[in-house]
Length: 432
Ligand SMILES: [Mg+2]
Image (cartoon, rainbow, N blue to C red; front, side, top):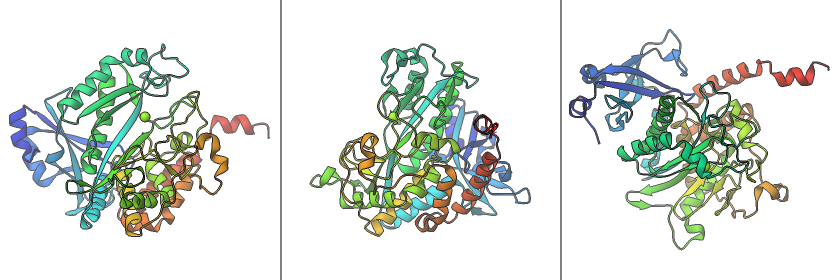
């Protein structure tokens, strides 16, 4: 694991460093710093006008400094003379509490007090689209059930293989790539790891996919629902808690191979699910995915109710095998840092309060939802989710430094959206 960026630059031929941070809305911001200056940047940080990005700051605030974390160094596979490093934001010599990477490190430190380390794996779905964003990039990708379409996958071999080769060279352990359930949609999987490591990789993966797609004359989007007739972009998260080398969610003798702590963690996630949507489904557009009608394949691939199950893809939480669970709620817009921070906070609350998730459901939620009216539904829009987050004692206690800033900026975004006059309104209301 790199510790000295100046030495890494000499050894690897890195000429520039991208000192990068992810803001509250998930946008990556960076300064490009020549290797000759990296020693000073590591000492003092790269300065930013924080208010100019999605952070809760004003022009009257002093400089924000991005302190590069050498352990996160990634040499750009498509431009090896540049090294990307994730950074932690500092202002007035103190960590910026609402900076997403700081928030995740905070919840992980809280978990560590009880001896827990969270490990996560993420399944980032994306579309390869035309550069102007109007349509998918492959006009021949037209099957009505396109999932795992071999021909369409291989027509994008050059892009997918370049990204997969890069992940292998970076030591991420990529193991499969496929065409997903929507025309033009793909997913690439790599090994799970410590939650902060995965968060940095998740952030970098989005940057890498977009960059490599651009290099091939295409555009990549992780937008939750870019096309109303096609399955949206999910970002399923696989979660386990560890004590040292031991997976504390594994219990071969228990139902579904999941330990009592694992079930209690799920109980916590179920109990905070509506508030979690504010982080896992963070955009206006997100709610067109989680409440979507089924596509021809027979699934939306996303939940609309707060339930869990064994190996059944119609529920919010699936336990596909022992020792972990899959949270299917998140989408492509979720912040790589805030999402796991919030899930960990909810899960820790479940363990500490021994929250009982009840028995798992086994029904097909797409066809038999009406048989379980007691199961609560997910929020129908971003505003409802933000209200749930504001009311969540659990999440506000765990993420006290981040949530007020997040709510403030997200409310402003909602108000901006609500003021926007849509074509639908004109069509349905002109003749009122
Ligand atoms: Mg998928």
